[in-house]
Amino acid sequence: MSNRTFLTLHSTIYAFFAFALFFLPGFLWPNYGLELNDRYAWFLSQHNSIFLGGIAIIGFLLRNVTDGTTAQKLLTGLMATNALGFVVTLYAALTGIFTGFGWSDPAFFAFLAVMSFLQLKKLSQS
Image 1 (cartoon, rainbow, N blue to C red):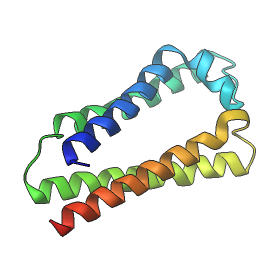
Image 2 (cartoon, one colour):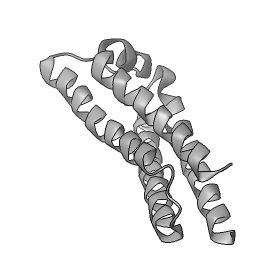
Image 3 (cartoon, rainbow, N blue to C red):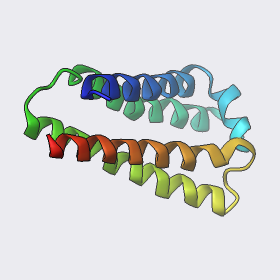
Image 4 (cartoon, one colour):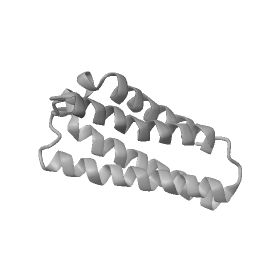
């Protein structure tokens, strides 16, 4: 897949979750076994959407990058971000913080980390 397609898809996924965490935290988090007990928990969900939205925006704005070094750095950053997401959410799933649909987060981040790695590998070979 082209970098443009990959970055557009990656950004769309991140943007979807950013909007969901900001506008629908009361619907989303209970599916993961988490409760939003007060306005502070609600705000932390919305605060988290800043970073997911930021990653979406950066990937979207740089989807047409043609400079190999810049593309390599962007893909490396996305791969590391997704690998970190995998570690953190796997911990939540294994310790029982995430239940229900919580298994999907480590799978999601692992998938995007692998896809970022494969895209980076493809870029390095060209």
